[in-house]
Structure formats: C-alpha cells, structure tokens
Amino acid sequence: MRRLILLAALATVSTTAFAQLPGLRRRDPVPPAIGPQQAMPIMGIDALRADFVARSGSDMVYFGGDAAVLTPQAQAILQAQANWLRQHPEVIVRIEGYADLSDTRDHALAVGAKRAEEVRSYLMLLGIPAAQMTTVSWGKEKIAVLGSAPAALALNRRAVTVIVR
Image (cartoon, rainbow, N blue to C red; front, side, top):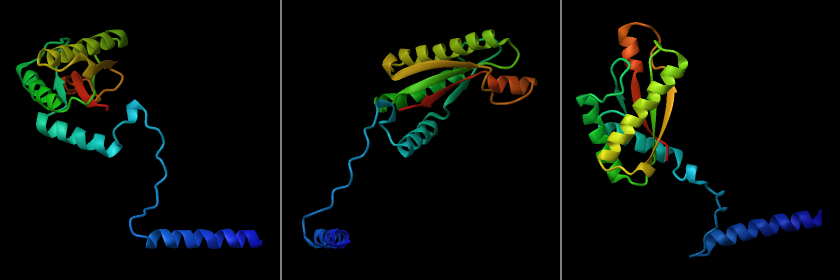
C-alpha cells in the first residue's frame, strides 16, 4: 500500500514539475506505424477529394450506350482532372468503370473495364503517370440509379475518378 501511495505521489510531482520547467515538454506517445495505404489522414483525403471535384467540375464522366468513347464534355472534365493531378503528384487515384443494368453481369464488367481504361489512357495522354492511377470495373454491381428508364440507364454508364491516397 505504501508503495502505491509513493508511486502516485511521484507521478503527481513529476507531472507538476514537467509543467513548470520551461523548455521541457511531455513527449506524446509514438503513433502506430502507418502503412502506405494510410499515409494521408482521413480528413486530408476528404479535403483533397472536395478540392479535386471543385476544381475539376466533377469526379465522373458519362458514356453513351454500350460505348467506351469519351464525349467532348467528358474530355473537358478529364483535362481539368489532369491539371489537378499534375499539381498533386503524390495523389493516387482509382478509376472505377460502371455499366447500366441492361446487360449480363460479365458483359457489364467488360464494358466497365473498357470505360475505366479509356479514362486512364486519356489521362496518360494528358501527362499523368500510369503509376498514379489504377482501374477497377464494378460493372452493374454498384449502380447509381435504380430503374430501366433511359435517364436511369444513362446515369449508370460512367467512370469515376476516386482519390485513394
């Protein structure tokens, strides 16, 4: 019991002494090791994403029908995205390709992959290094809008540029 009281008193005295000595600071505990996929704090990524969308006009481009051809509007958005990405070479993006509900799962995955790759190729033509981008196809697995109306189908035919790190 005496030892416990002595340890408590010693801890209180050392804390008080630390606070009163100029030039001395208590050391914060060492943060856990951060892996490469977690190099940026979550808020930092959120702020980057918001800035990316604000300066690029959008993080997504749309495609027509069963195509993976970039429209002039999509090219303009991708040019703005490329400008932003050149200013942030530390940022890694994942380009996600999507399809509408009108096709089979396998065909939708193939179309989504073509769309993601088309965006990646265009960004590379604009000077973005391949190492700064990855691609994935979600096909029709993660649709934006339910329904089979032409407007709903059109909103699902897209590629999204996502900041991951």
